[in-house]
Image (tube, rainbow, N blue to C red; front, side, top):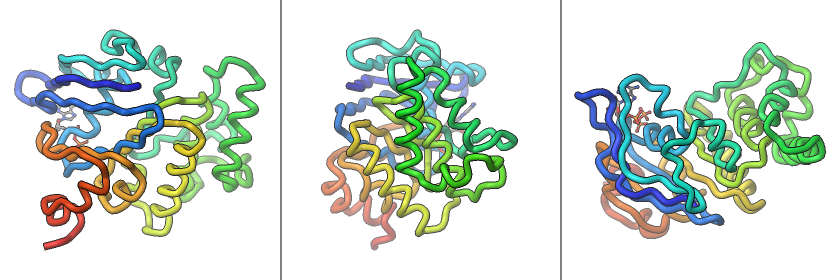
Length: 241
Ligand code: ATP
């Protein structure tokens, strides 16, 4: 479904963010991308979603294909229309708009009113709190609820591949656990997921495959069961010794 070969990204002359990344995501996959601050995780998602070129001086090389189509020259809206939808880091909901208006904004690209209504029902089933708070301003929601809204808004366009950038950031452990369960549920309903996370415990629970990025390179790759057993992952990301 998604196939990335030798992806290289620079920001201007001085910063090389990715040095030749390979990654495959199957239609029924959840792939976690682990790594510490600055490893290049967000850059990878930006390259997939087409938003990289909004960053000054960025230059990308290599090949990103979705269902065989090269994404390199497409703008972000065209990539969304193909079914690849991102939820950026920091849950950028429209704070002054209501929950419902945020969801409607996510559904603008839907092909029909029926599909939009079905997507809204799906989002309300996954996140009942978004139905309860439909008329409330998004800026008044808790951090966890805003993350749910950001994911819900992305689901409104019926994505086939969802790109999540650190959904656990700044959230309490119980909320992280709930978000993890919801990501599994979204996957069970037929949406593939790329999950960028610093929270390795959550990511390895939720995903089936994972890569570990270290300063722009894939340091480790495998099934999450294999990675959870790896001494390096235990030591660096799971608090082992
Ligand atoms: P974080 O978890 O902190 O977001 P990350 O793994 O997502 O980290 P990136 O944000 O992709 O890492 O950053 C990779 C490298 O590229 C870092 O060295 C970062 O400083 C640099 N970088 C990221 N965005 C830009 C930009 N717009 N301009 C210049 N350098 C950038």
